[in-house]
Image (cartoon, rainbow, N blue to C red; front, side, top):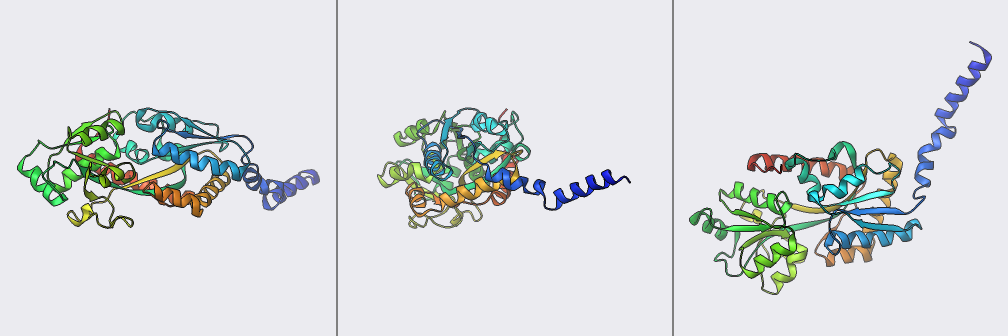
Length: 327
């Protein structure tokens, strides 16, 4: 081997073992963010997902010394906005807010424009929240057990409203049908506001929803609570029973999270995840989250990735068992 070639190989080995190349991950992490960051929200402005994104963006902007812009891209059961995140330049400057539709969609949709597990990486689970089963006060059932008995006595006559086919609200109702051996009829709407209006007016007697947006209706007596979908009762409202107290093992958890394109360098994903987790755990931010009826989480990327994989598998089974499919 020539002397020049030996020197070249030794230099390359030195780079790998501790020279400039070894610092590339650190440089990538330290350089982020180098320009304004975009948070894509796959729902319209003003809803809980949008509000949470804007709260988070404000704190991240302070931390990163860069502008953080929230952009609302609606449609496709949240897939239009999330697809923009999956296809964005892999530099970490485009992040996406997701809800449980992120893990339900792969189980029920045949038109997915991206591969949820291959094209996207979890950044952080921001919050967790109960879903609840609520009813119009006129419904002659005041508990899950009474609802099941009523549904069995009048098969195919009781209905439940949802913001649309394939939403967490929808699959929760189908899971209740399957577990309880009843036949509640699904009435899909174009969004939560329309579904709320018809349940509050009594046109449709039942609805599954996240606790935060219906809490005030329950407390005002416009809706009545039948059951909470968590394993344990709500910490702030322990007077409300869980559905699992009647149907052991019944559990539906709603979660907000952040995802990013899977080709973004891992050190950048870890930095973003750590910064977001830190913000979520700040006492003032966490208090605001609890005011919305949610619990702050602030997980790291690998933990959120595992949550996503587990929930996709879980809802795939529910969709298969209940024959739920969006063409």
